[in-house]
Picture (cartoon, rainbow, N blue to C red):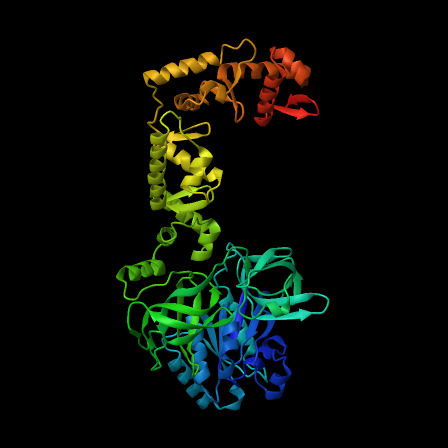
Length: 627
């Protein structure tokens, strides 16, 4: 079922609040000052049902120029706008400014509602309609229906409701596949419940007991209850006006403009790369370092403008601009925003976020401009590739990529699959790396292992954990395993048990080393008892013996602990003998094992402790059982 949010827009005293009361039977001006002054100051929220039984949320915004900030907070998430124009006054300054704002926020559907129609004659009514048609020419409302109403007598209200119902059939479904995101436009406390926030759920869904985060303060909170249009529900979906009771956050810790979203789904930034367009009916220009008011979601932030490809953006023109913010923001690529001058406050333009977490740029960089063009219009896979390319030392997950691109998980995975086929991206478990980073891993691997083999010519290779610490300590061992398997398939390296070496590396003994090897093997087999010897006894502080013995460990020699070694074949034999004994007898004591292998107590203790560490056996009291 589609979730529909309607918003009003228009000049002060043109009848927006009265129109909503005629549609819903409810009053949205609730503040004492609003009732006293007869104007809307804050946002008002209510709902009504269409003839098709669809329930519609409705946002009433203030029309006075002093409260444009409040109007902007409510305009985010609107599906259909009712541009309200009083027929006795026609299009006024705030009508035009509201229309500009709605255009920059990418509202695509609307109805022009001509109010107070019972106060003028038919001739004046036609003049008003002609004026409106002229003023909306070139905007998204150019071909919009003009519905004549009188909210007091209810003239035309049924016609308006039917038109809304008809238009609601063509609305695009909101994306529920993205992580939850809600721009907070109100926060208050309810006795017995605690903190409540409201807003339009832009993306995803929110359920009772969800663990979410309030950005930018990163307050961890849990959802206690959810209401949609005054009714308690288990879940709210993208496109619905929602009131949410949260825990672990106080009212004074939250403000309008904060964002409730899934954990790790948003990233704070002090800069935004944007494509800015200026209104064409003003003499305002945008110059380097102009101080502006940025309106994003339900938030206002002061910022400085840095045009990147021109000195000045003129009225009616567009350009790439980096906005340097005075406070941190959480935003996504593709988000829309509005810009107003610092003082006097006037809407001069708006645009779209191309990169929500960029680096600081130099101006007039042709390569940068081409990258921004790609990010603005390129295919998703090209945008993701560029994102990974400029974050080579960060390891991006599906959530990072969704947060950056604003796309669903399904679309991201399809784009990544294309990049993998094109050999532009490598997937290492749950992280994505650009192929150039993978190439750097291969180069570094060859350098690390070449240096190791040169230093330790008789060692089979480097232990995997040591290799991980030298190549990329941020990786978990499972990530290194995946990376090594890629390089092993390319015959760059080989892995034997826990040892990594270059693919073509082999240990080669000279004649002297061969003699030493034979002597060590002889020592490990000549003891009539169980031949367990210390490394010190075998090598006798001889460097050459130490080097050869180390190369034999893991092949013909088994290292039992930090001190003792034994012949590997004998080791495997006594291990098999013990396992067979335990299969039949279930348990064995140290004394019984000493008799079984005809050795001394010390040797038996050394080898049993080795079996315990390798999980062949397990000690219970003074006995061993199979692990």
